[in-house]
Length: 523
Picture 1 (tube, helix red, strand yellow):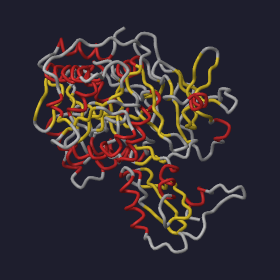
Picture 2 (cartoon, rainbow, N blue to C red):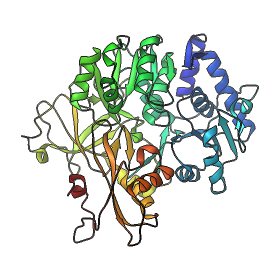
Picture 3 (cartoon, rainbow, N blue to C red):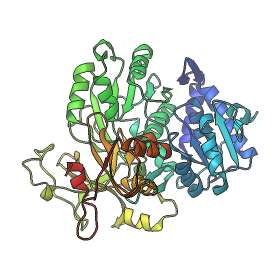
Picture 4 (tube, helix red, strand yellow):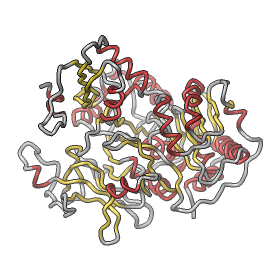
């Protein structure tokens, strides 16, 4: 079979001198990038790391991430991307659960890896950005030669990102070579004329997240375009980059576009070079969409996807667009496509509306909404070593395997889908998913906390932000600011509560369940 790796290899052969990665004023051509990826692959093999072995990539958006990603796949390995904001306790689970044998880490984060080594199978730590104890510097790790690309089958696992369910326990998502190749090719056809070798893509979305990895990085490498990684989101930096480098494609989350339209110098920027801009990760407010288009004169399209669907399932396109919709199911190579439908709890199709969007205040949403379920060549193989979770995630009907998204919506006669709510208690803040139980469990470990509940509350910039209500112990002396600092020390920055309130008791039902709607409403 032809994997994405071999597709990229063909791109390298046809455009070896074209810019592949542009970062901090330096350019790697396709031939240079491909050679470095090959040297990384050989280094893995020289250290006994090869087919089906996991390699953790614990980096922000840097050229070394792209090199390690494709180098791992060239060696027949499986990429385990990890959020560089994660602390030791968070990566400890990812490394331990996946059985990763190697980790490529930012030098500043190597200590987090070292602190959990005894609980993992990690044999090799590679550092980026400096020489540190316990790790081999990236360029020193690279071998002098490149070996042939290892063949992999369609159903072989290529990437194992982690997501969290309603339990708050991160789950490994098994994405196959077919999954990532199909998604890359299908999404590259969404803009008018498709991704092109002349395109310059801004890498604002984090590469540890499937959205930034699969859609932007892989899309650029597959099409022969230039990828401009941005390690940390900053509206000024990105807008300057788009304007000066005349970048043509941007994918982002609603909070990014909200920052751009509210930038103090927004009116002074000329972003006319952008020919396609797409929002995903969380629901795009209609006000943000329209203000962005009015401010910059560029259409902003909305799409939809999940980690388990690698990720894109729906997209709006030129000539096929409805504001407020996630779009229509994605078409892929040949006659392949995503199949989607809205179903009841009994897995019966919910009747379609004539044309969306509807007036949700006047409509009887109970009659027209249900759960969005997905099938297609982009849907994951399953969760890693979690048979019960797989049983819950899938329904098989007439030989078709349907994935349950947990999102509630409706559909219309023109195949446009609309998401109106989330079935799960997940908080989506700035495009990142936060699961309350993970934060709650950390809060319960604090000696001054007797009880706690975490919810998402509206936030103008991020869509939602994390709020915690805490019942202190009788002799507690911790302040709300100290509780915030405690969470920030142990969790990624976006997960920590930005609001902490102390209460005598939490509102509960007679069966003991916290009434989270009262916390959200401030009751």
